[in-house]
Length: 357
Image 1 (cartoon, rainbow, N blue to C red):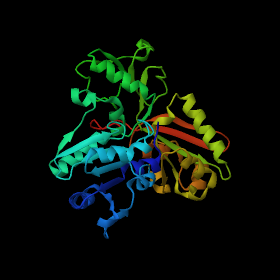
Image 2 (image 1 turned 90 degrees about the vertical axis):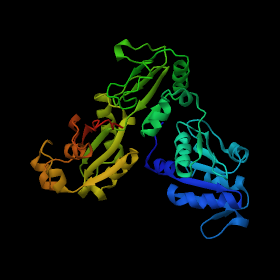
Image 3 (image 1 turned 60 degrees about the vertical axis):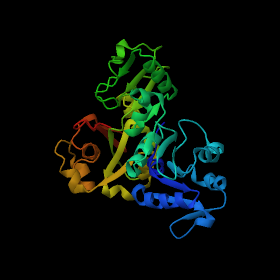
Image 4 (image 1 turned 30 degrees about the vertical axis):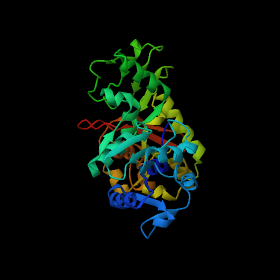
């Protein structure tokens, strides 16, 4: 599972639902600090509030449009209101409940992937409430691997395996883990239960955690997390269609054993803003798109230079220079590769002071 830029923006949006005057007062005090939109029954509405006649009709439009939902009132109201719209652990947004007196902030739904546990803690910090977290791994102080991946903005695959990993950890049994750069787990080894395991020693039938930007780990019981750390630089001749550009990118990723899920950003020269094929290909990759001025690209000394490219674009390197700029000093993991009309290169964002994702 991977979120594109639009989905990531939705995941950060917060909706506050109040059902009484006291709850509305609390919602309005929280809204500026959460950057939230406030919804309340029409009888309570005013300029700062969006009114509703039926919370069920309202949620039909808001439940997927917001990544975080806070109900101020009884938990039962929230449960009944959201029930018709639930689709599954990997798809549902975060839902939390805050009572009207701000005594308890309850993580109700999607505690890990949706980050409702984090939302409950945030509400507790803002109001002085007691955060109520009931997910088993959190209660036991064990790392929830799916929650860690969501917190760090990683793409994930084989999500059901995360449940199997948690079950084994809760039983106090060891789990194999491949995270050589510590991008997911950092230094947390769950008290020695998460055992570093090399790919050649991996047991494909046992639960495990696999985190890397290279392709691999596609075992039935392995939860896979892909750090967004690969930076793609692109160049193309005028008229190259998006499908040709995308095909070359896919070929390079396959040849170099790079995980497409780990793509963080794609960049090119500013002069290519008006190129329909390149722009379509870049935006279709679902990563951040960046255009660089020729001067910025030309200043990247590590990139290979071409006089032909310099005459056309004002800089001797486009794809390698763009990749290196996006990676903020990280190394190339795929040097310039070209067809008759497309060039691409890939650089790696490295961990800096423990921040890796």
